[in-house]
Structures are given as C-alpha cells and as structure tokens.
Length: 185
Image (cartoon, rainbow, N blue to C red; front, side):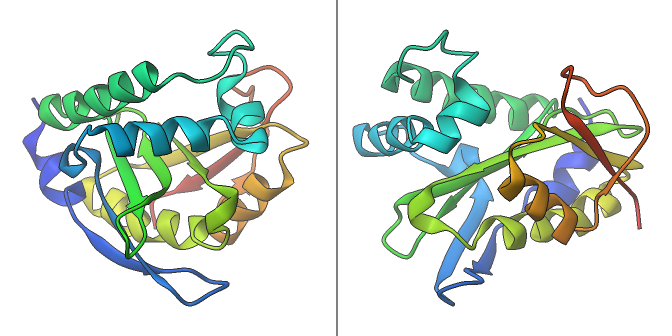
C-alpha cells in the first residue's frame, strides 16, 4: 500500500465555475454517501447524451447506465483510496448535487491516465477541477499524466489543452483516440 500517494492526493478543494463564478467542492469520492439521491444523480449524468457517448456507451453495451452501476462505481472509487490503487474525485455544487467526477486511474508514478466527466448542467467546472489535482499529482511523484480522447470529443480536448496537456506521437490506449500527455512540472 502506497500511503504517501494518498497523503498528497487526499485533499478537498473549493473550485470555481469558469462560466458562472459559482463555487463547487472537489473531494475524494469516499466522502460521498452512496444514498439513493446520489445514485440517481450519477446515473442521470452518466446517461446524458455526451457523457454516455464518450464514457459509457461501450461499457454499458448500449443500454442505459443503471443506478446499480453508480453504487458499484462509488464503492470502486472508495476501494481505490483505501488500497491506494486509483484516486477518484467527485465535484458537487453548493446544494451538494453531483456535477462531475475525475480520476487518476492508477498509482503508477511513471505514467498514469486521468479521466473525467461533467454534467451539461454544470459546464465550466472541469478545467478548474483538473487544474486543482495537477499540483497534487506532481507533489505525489507522478512523472507523467496522460489522456486519450476521441477525435470528435472537442470539449474534452479543450479541457485537457487548457490544463497544459499536449498531443504526442505515441499509440493511444484506445485505437483512433488522440494521445495527450503532461509531464510533471
């Protein structure tokens, strides 16, 4: 168990929506209660057209993302923090409604993938959420963070570029996707 990674990454932040100026809370997912309301919100966001298309269509085999999967995702995220294997964050608004999520998908300090999704109802938070965890990842010792993004997912590409990631010449983890990387600053 790599406790030192958790020591750096286990933080809660107030982040600002770049469009509305509203404050949101970015926190590790293990702090999120797996209550019915949260499961319902997660499933609803994961079934939004763009989130579903880019993140869940393949995983769900074309059927809607169910609340049972939301419960499993929260548990998986909490287990990741407990075992220091992956690090999932959730973003909530001032009413404690779920707005977005992001994660560092492994504890491999040499090279780890990040991923994220955000509700269309909360546009303007993802870049600041990613920016909030980057210094933590640097301090934890991650040498390189990467993301592989579908060429038609222009919003995600814009987020990752705003956060200092650049396209690179390497084989993406998913065929046809565009590889982006950000070395430790």
